[in-house]
Length: 92
Image (cartoon, rainbow, N blue to C red; front, side):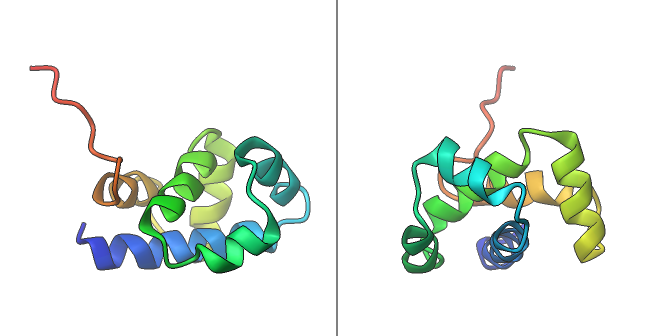
């Protein structure tokens, strides 16, 4: 996945998370981010990576996000890998 596509998907994830009244406070508490941070850092690829990292912590969250956006379940991981800090180590 190209970085532009990854950022677009991560922005969709951020919007989905922002509209989730149950999950948003969990994200804010886990990351230490504020609502203002979410607004000001929405164009920051590293912050968008943290949004995807958070959603990928729970399969149910991934499924809910993907189903809401009509995405394949593996797309958030592909997007995460294209954003800063998301490259998986090659163990071979």
